[in-house]
Image (cartoon, rainbow, N blue to C red; front, side, top):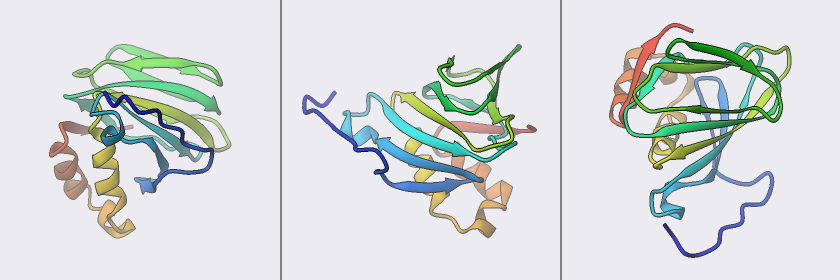
Length: 150
């Protein structure tokens, strides 16, 4: 892990739109020697990724605002502001903003790496992002298996 402190002011960080989710990379893995990454995510109502598996990293979510549904294996739960959810690697999972307004999450990935996939997908045009086989193949390069469904 990097021994230097890192301060990321509010409203800063590289921004990407990934399948309708607005993501700001607050801490990149290159800033932590690959130990972790943090992303602030803003999801519109009824927005969330399809069911997928992370084969490399754990994910932890902190709900900043909104109401989210989390599914991980057989577990299904909802949570609002202040809720923390840990989703282990290797288990199919998804999350979705189930509210009527934009919801915000702070996502921690450990180890880092998936943020690079968000950068790669975010670099695609909206038309390219709608090419689901292309997105599935891109995600697989980062150890993420998209299973589909919502």
